[in-house]
Length: 298
Image (cartoon, rainbow, N blue to C red; front, side):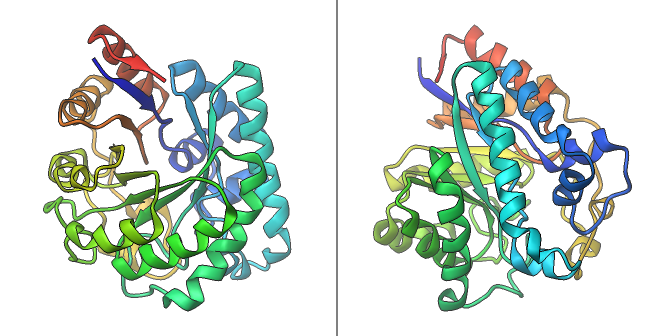
C-alpha cells in the first residue's frame, strides 16, 4: 500500500458558496476582503476532513487582477491575510503542511494571454518570495502552456522553496495541455527547473488518467486534483469573467470522486485532492476510502 499526500479541495468556489455573495471577477480575493473569517473556516474544514495540506488562498492575488479594481495597494496585505489563515488552521489542527498557491498571471485557462517568460518570471518571483517564509512549498497551479509553465517555474524557483508544478489539461484529451501542446513537452522544463512533484489540476476527472500516464514518466512524485465543472465555457474565456459562466456538474458525488482518485492511486499517483467544486465532503470520503484500502495518508 502507498503513502498518499491528501491535498485539500477547492477554495474559491467554496468561499463564494459560503459567502452568499454574487461572484465577481476578483472571485476568492473579493470574498476574502468582504468575509475575512471564511478562509480560515474552509481550511479548518479541509483539515477536519483529513487533508494534510492547506493551500493558501493566494491563487489570484496578482497585480494585474487587483489593478483593475484599484486594489493593487492591498497586494502584500492580502498575501499576509491568506498566509495567516492557513497558518492558524494548521496550528489548530496540530500539524500539516502549507502550500503557497500561485495561479496563472492575467487569466485562468487561457493560452492566448500568456506573458513572455522574461516578463512573467519576475512577477511570479515576487509572489513566491512573499509566500516562502511561511509555506512548506510553492504550488504552481492550472498552467496551460509550455511558455506559461516556464515563466512560472523560472520565477518560483528563485524563492528557495520546493516547487510543485500543476498543469491543466484538455478536458477531452488528457495527454495535452489546454494549449494543445503535448505533456511530453514538459520534459526539458522538468529537467531544467527540477520541481519536486508534477500534477494535473482543474480539468474534469475523466481526463486525469491520460494526464497521469504522461506525468508518471518524469520520475517524480505525481498526482491529480480535478474540478467539478462540466467543461470550461467560452464565456469564462473572455476578459474579467465570473464563475457563474461555468456549469457545475451534479453527478460528481463524494463517492464517485473518490472512485476516480483511487484509480489515479492505482496508476501510481501519490498526491491526490480536489480543485474547484470539490469540497470538504469529497475530501472526507476520499480520506476514508484511502484508509479503507490500506493506504497511509501523510
